[in-house]
Image (cartoon, rainbow, N blue to C red):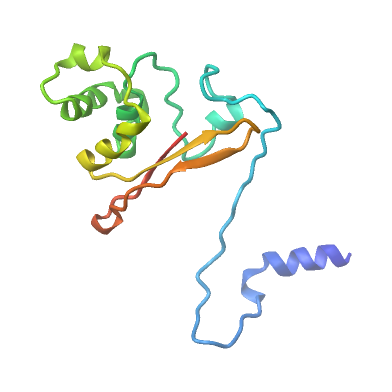
Length: 158
């Protein structure tokens, strides 16, 4: 019974006792944590598992077999539909690899980790990168450059 009352108090936003200061209550933040109990990294093992693929706000672009992955991510981040991002990805690839045509961009190698800074500078977009470690935990390996001042949120890729 006591646990039910605590849950009711916690979930009833109108009855929360707040300190009487000049601070104001901004709102609740809901965080969902998913633990993957596996030492096997998901990267490079085919398509993402359904529990991750179907998350709201996540676009799984792992069904394409080409080297346009970073440019696809940028295109989707800028508002292109995930199922129609190939043309925009090629256009972005041509901007990054100046002087290339469509086929050269498709056949070129994928953008390497050390080139991410150049991509950020070219497209004025911060890119945050996570990668799996040997113990199965995803670690932040690259902080994004800051372009929020011009109204562009950083992009996160794994």
